[in-house]
Amino acid sequence: MHFRLAEEIINLSESKEWDFAKLEWSFEFAYYADELQKCLCGHYPIKNICVIKNQKNSFVTEVGNCCINKFLGIEDGNKIFSSIKKLKENIAASMSAEVIEYIYRKKGISDFDYKFYKSIYRRRIMSTKQCEIKKRINQQFLNFTSYETNSHFNKINLVLKWAETNTSFNTDFILSIKKTCRQKGRLTEKQLESLNKIIRDFKIK
Ligand SMILES: [Zn+2]
Image (cartoon, rainbow, N blue to C red; front, side, top):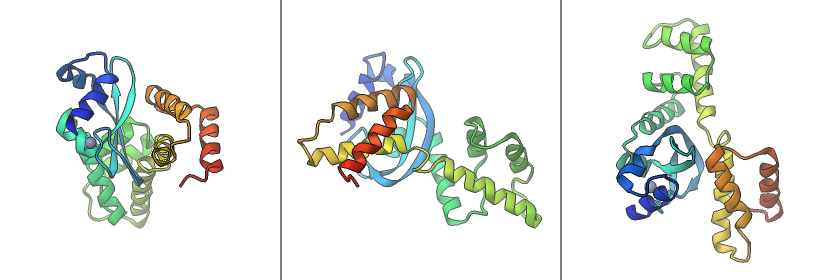
């Protein structure tokens, strides 16, 4: 199982040695998938997904939280997932300092929101207005890390999973757009349209 992850990562890396190949990768972003997905290592199901990017060839791929910690030594994913969990339970709670920096760096919140959040950080007594703004920013973070926002990979994976049991379906197109998605981090409008059409036509759920 672990071997499989190494193999998949090496395929996408410049170096063909795992010890070096893994160093080419850095954390890009994390999201929470409502629909169950499979990790590169074969682990199923996973819900906490980390998108990682190769700094040498700009390839992008996804791994489950299971692998990001063990093999790639990237800590950020976990912090993001614990903030997602916390805010889902209580939208008035606070995201961690690392997560505020992360979401700001990713342009998920505005300059104003960033400064505001830091100014009220750890403050227990707030005005109703401040409390509302804080909740709005929290919600923005949840949206940013949600399934919908990251649905390109999700949709591709959905079709591929469906194709495992519908073997007459030719997956060439899907695999080719998955490659683009890995390289660019997202699909073009046209590719997305074709993908949506396949999902509709075959009633894939
Ligand atoms: Zn894994």
